[in-house]
Amino acid sequence: MKKAKKARAAGAIKKTSSLPRSAISSSWPLGMVALHLLQQWRKSGRDGIVFLAGDENRAERLASIVHSLDRSLDVLVFPRLNNLPFEGLEPSREIAGRRSSVLRRLAKTKKPVFLVSTAEAIMERLPLPESLSRLSAILKVGAKYAEQELQTRLETLGYDLDEEAEFPGTALFHGKTFEIFPAGALNPFRIEHADEAIRKIVAVDPEEHEVMFEVKELLVDPMFERLALEGKRGRRATLPDYCVRARWIADAAISGHADGWLSTIEEAAGQKEVEREYLGRGEWKKLAKRMSMLPRKAGFAPTPDFSKMAAPRKALRAFTADTQRAGSRLLLVAAVEDDLRAMERMSGIKAERFAGWDEMKEGLNREGALLADFDAGFVIRMCRSRVQSWFISSEGWRCWRACRPSTWGKGRPARWSGSNSQETTPFSFPPPISP
Image (cartoon, rainbow, N blue to C red):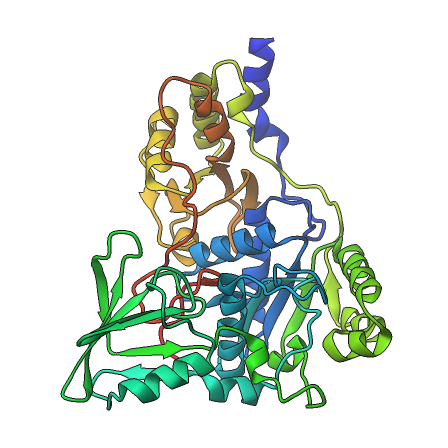
């Protein structure tokens, strides 16, 4: 049995003589779907793309992977409010703040959008893009500081001024400083003022309260998108109004998700209320006609799952040797650096670190490594090259190592923290740098 498994791993190179010709499918590994979406976004020119994922975890993870492949790209994730339609309960301030921040950025951006969301998230009717854009407050170093006026403005935007700034939507004023945790942010900010002017703005670690970085400008979005609605009878928009030119792509099961959520909405209230607050079935069908639906399944070339083999290290070494003899290229992918180093030790290779997909394509003849949260390994052929590239993911190795005495890295980060910027959004990759 051991020899058979080893033979299957070592012989995998010979069995994969060419890449699958079928279209991308929803069942493919997240890394392959992310590469497809990145390619489609680049082809879209000034239009951009919107991708509807099957669930929110998939949406967030895909956005994280796309950002890992191209760190210059602003990828936005628009989450669903975590309350049920018409139940009368407030959504969490964290989720509501994320949505508000993403909508404002969509309304203001002049770049081609890259938005990831779900069918459930896009059903609400929204404020007009121009209405939401006008609500945000901007704090700048050197600008006039009037405390009472600012407090009134923040209360209008839905902020609680009596709580420590430990979670989104809170602010606390004391002496010559105040701290605020903006809508959609990953961390609070401390603002210092003197002589009726803002002197300094710094990001603060939410747990250690240490200064992380300094910025010149901070954008404060409203905590709830509904604050921009113009009354019950006022005009309303839908998410497509925020990304008019974008091309829409969706997972295979998206129609089923939409149908189920529309049924939940229709059962919760009368027809007039439903039509005022949510998209109707006719509007959804019209939007769905614009979407390119991914097929449910299509064949692809996977890499062996070494974590399930009796001797993973030995099998990986044999596989590495066969890959190199065949003239193919091995690329290691993991969410954290510790995992990459462990994979290097087990495979016996020293992989060059690549910052993104473009660098990886340029290094065609070199073994490489990339920090990205792939869920599985796969084989592709680089553009303009006959060399096959084998992506080995650390996902299965974590499960294997969890049952061993030693530790396999630190695992995937609980939440991506992004780079230093004055405006940070956990459902945005990377966080926005300027309005």
